[in-house]
Image (cartoon, rainbow, N blue to C red; front, side, top):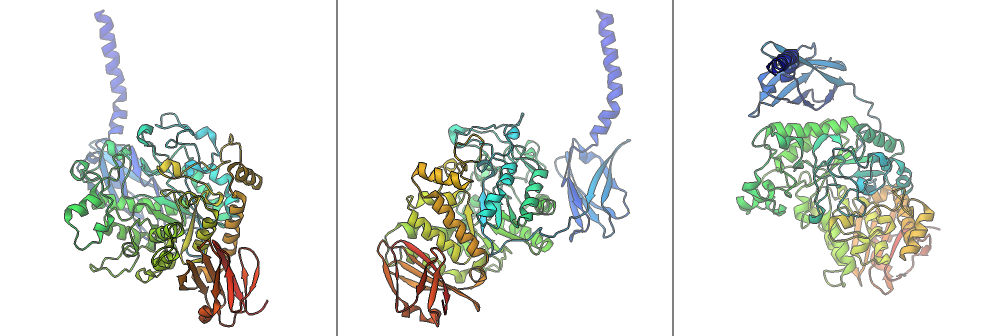
Length: 634
């Protein structure tokens, strides 16, 4: 027995001796380096690498490269991290940059890749009022690759019967239906977040992470959606079809199972939830000159929810990491814009710097910040060059126009009055003097956080036509939520607002991506689904070639008898829009609009194709939109 034990000890000692070089190498070998690669020829020549590995801070890194220098080594309180500032010279060529980590007599050389930038034709294009954006929640749109719906080792699988579970939609499903989106006339896609969200779920508490807003890896597409390469394929195919791609990003928070949370770089990387609790969602405290410090800190430092740790962007290393991550995705994937989630919740100075740096690197790019604010003033405050008392400038080109959304839904549903009904919409637009550029506002009648439009208006098709006609013809950049064009319903809890697109799964009995399927679905549900699709498609294609709608002046008139009249006009064309929100027909006395009707004698209704003679009056049927292209002759 002793001889056997002796042999085992000797064998173990021998194996240990054999493994010593590997153990020594591992001690100075990074487990992660982020960004995973960078490019030559960027406007900013500096890149900061986050290097993670056991006791990596005990190693001494060096770079031996003719045109890349290691400018600074930054150690933090956690010895498992090092931050390396590299300066990439103008003459640096694509290839490998050897970063050698030395610890005593042990070394390891990490080959960091520098890539050549792609041709930027049809990349980083930005988006503007000439666009119509189609918003897709990837998990709920279409399943193009069932083999990746469930990934071994990841927390959540698929359960389509559970509204808060993953349903299996993926990037391939979007690629497979790009023709549908193009046929609908859309010019841009906005995808809810696609980065890895490998989080535990609790359906009993309505908690699931199919939505993507609790990232666990900021450099990796969730494998249940596809791969980084598959996302690039989507962007390239969209660009080939003339469709832009807008990426959803979140810099306010991550998920509790982000790899950082197991071993934070520094104690000030995330806010202390025990101290600050969860956010109050009172974002008005950020610009309120009388706000208490307590209220302000609860808004900015509180966690969004228990599963989403709140990032502290005052840490300069974290701020740099997040900015570089943004630039990496723009350069790598060629995306055309960003929608920044919860834009007011991080530190405003960080958000301004992030925006400034990104737009400096990509001048044609565009960013819309989700500014879910209670009124026009607090929304306009977030757009660039707003005259704040403090001199703060957000640099943010575009904001989400929640005040207009609220006015549309309320205005269509309530009884008309002195400041209600159509007058509410008129009054909201009349406050556009507060915005630096209201034409850059993203406008909508619903999105992934809101009740479906058809539900919010009591499934009234007439109101649907009025609302859609409005956002297609007023100022701003229209955004359509997937399925709105086929009268999808859903209200209340988030999962109920994000139902699957019918036909996106092989087992679906009806395919609404097809004309036949839309007719069948309409018959089954008793709704004019095919007509709604055609209504939206016709307006989208008409709007696409209408500079007067994109950039023309907007002149509107005080609503009378709940009928709202406005004109879009430029030097070349005039369009008259009439929205009768009353049940009764309304006879317009056209003399009232003489300043814009001028010599125009005729108007062709874009919606019906009917040609109207513009005499002394024009009768508009109840609950009807009219969009008239004006002309002096037939």
